[in-house]
Image (tube, rainbow, N blue to C red; front, side):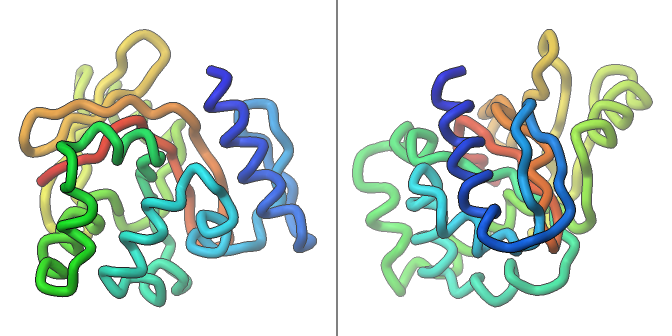
Length: 179
């Protein structure tokens, strides 16, 4: 919980340099005028994600109007991958694989936590989300937390929700999703 609070505080500070509409995320006031990329770039705990997005050439896409829902893995999430994985993926010859993995973390449209929970309840405990990579993610509740299951059966818990940005919403996750 301490890491989540620090992350939300960092995101709030990253977005506070521009005036805009105030929103609440985990009891932290945030100003949502920057886009997803601008905010992520200002958050130290998302630096691996930003480096990967840069290597994949997806900066312009994720800075576009969208809207997008991004499940953003923290640096610690990337550290859970086998040693050398990130270094290998960011090499130019692996751009297609990296792009597929990163776009697997993005859903077209703006899905708030309320929207996701409603879809889970409507699906009798399970919601299928289609990513911009064309693959499926399964979402379910575990207590009060949303858990995302990827195509390989890996699970990631959403640790911070509804971080509203000018071109969508970010939900921070604790593991990298793999198609």
